Image 1: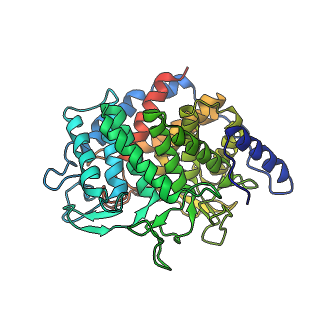
Image 2 (image 1 turned 30 degrees about the vertical axis):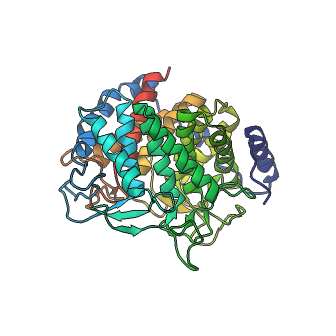
Image 3 (image 1 turned 180 degrees about the horizontal axis):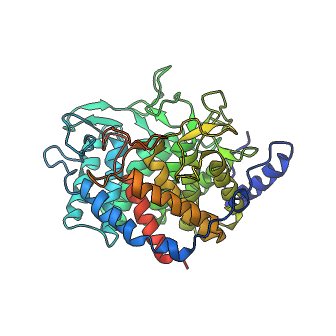
Length: 447
């Protein structure tokens, strides 16, 4: 594969050329408006949902986490609660969730929904990342420490974790005006860029030993991929992190890398004939499409739409050249993963086939409601309001645990909620907290 395009104009042109060249491939899914009759959902009806959405944030999500997740004994945040929200013994502190909780505290600080004492909770999380999770010998953030923070359990460096740390610290710097925090975020970015950026093929190598050398042969990354694989998912969150860091710093290298990541997330990871994304790629961005990898994660595809749109906003670049791509990506997920009867999207499915993993996962629904509003903003197509309306009502009545707080991790096809833990190393308040903040802001601004 040729070098990943480095300017947005070239990337958009490459997408057009690729689409034309695939004329003999299966046609992409039709735009949302053509794939199903449009329900009579108006913007006024959707905006009328705002008080209930705000209630979910204020009365369900925020009090579940703050202040009780602040670990005043060991530092950082506790993310180990049972099905009813009960504290559990043990647990670990992983860079991804510690960063996501810091991001949530910082984002809430910038909103009108911040509860009293939240600045202290954010300061607390920032200190834990800086003083405990940061490798003072080799640089970068450890993947995982024990609950006390005294034992490094997984010292390896993975770009997925590094991305969330940069994201959280950048948000914290914006929320607090802390110049030292911004300098730390830029320090982390420059280390990541020096150690992991692929100047030949674009993007980033993802998985390293503690000292940033190659991991042992055969070692599998914490995300379950071989060490030399590039993931759409990792690069999606690098894009998210760099967009926030660019807003905080206006750094020219951050800007250049963000442009590159937009190209990757709208070109290199897109399978034009489907039109959908795949996750696993070789170093030169050749897709890995064996039986296990030739499948689509509807949540990641839909999340990519609004995060790329947000990155373009951070770059002060127009979104219009990408809207047709976004329409078709959304339409693919709608065709194969949407439950029109009950609302909500299923987890994933094989190429060109209906979803076979049909649980409705909390983070997928979170991304849907943001992306649906973003697509309505771009197109004014009321079909996206219908998707938003039905997905929100599913979240409100089925995904949200109004008794014990937070959202159920997943809902089975028969409507039964999962009985798993409410908080784990992979489940914090980031996806749904971020979605509720985004939706409330977008509903207020939509005309």
